[in-house]
Amino acid sequence: MGDERVPPGWPDVVRPAGAPGWERTAVTWLLDQCPADYRAYPALRNQPVALAWLALRHVTAQGQANAAARSAARAELREHLTPDALEGVLVALDREHARLLGVHRGVRLVGEALQGLRYVPRL
Image 1 (cartoon, helix red, strand yellow):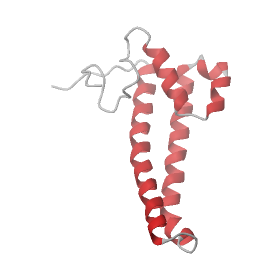
Image 2: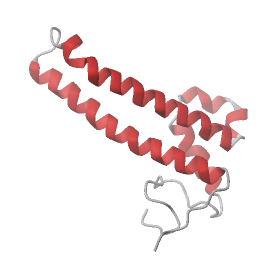
Image 3: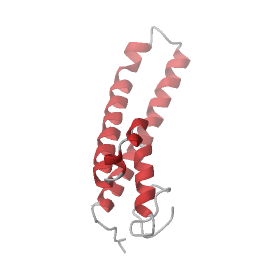
């Protein structure tokens, strides 16, 4: 985003905290980080702090599942995949790990902002 009002790692699609309509963009993005069925629950859509809390848990669980898969992939898939295919799976898992780290940071930052914490840039 390049906006000095947001911390590094703030999701590009979420407006800066305090800007008009920022909570709506935060809720939309947070819902994108959760299972699609969560959109059906008004209690989650209407309680952004609770949604952020839950989204953080989902992203954390995804990271744990990714770590377990990266740990087990070679041993469990080597008999079923060609070496090139297995390497492709491992690369995909590594890339997903990096993406999830960024999403985790973004969810945490948005959740903190929804709780009223505001980013103050360091000089």
